Amino acid sequence: MHNTHTNRQCKKTLIDCKLFSLSVSEQTNGWQNQRGKPFQQKGASRAKYGSSLLTKLSQMLRLQVGRGYSRPNLNNMRKFYLMYPFCQTSDKLSWSHICELITADNPLEREFYEKECVACNWDVRSLLRQMESGLFLRLSCTHFC
Image (cartoon, rainbow, N blue to C red; front, top):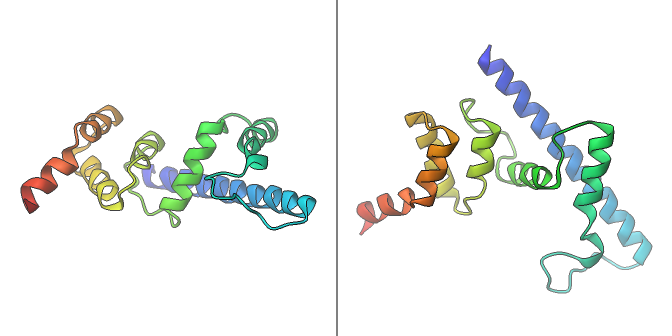
């Protein structure tokens, strides 16, 4: 039963992320056509004309779908979709666990913490405490130094 619930949750999250991705793509294409030139960021990490895109998308989704689509949550959904495109996380991890895991830029570090969460049955606070204390770095230094 728990596994089925988690699979449904994961599928819903993937659908949400794909919808978000499609909506962002449609918005970006609309802006490209309006401007008559290709999408350019001119070296910036974000384009100026897309700066309010997530805010507008969040408002639209909350009106149409309901709660759970705040701007930070949309950012987390996007990161999750990019880091786990096939939803290959453990069914023992909650969305809160995943939101903490996606803050790790290093894929090896993220995988380490994911496995430790499951093996040691960490709650979210334990995961956060271990990440902040640099457990991965400490253990990797003892193995490779």
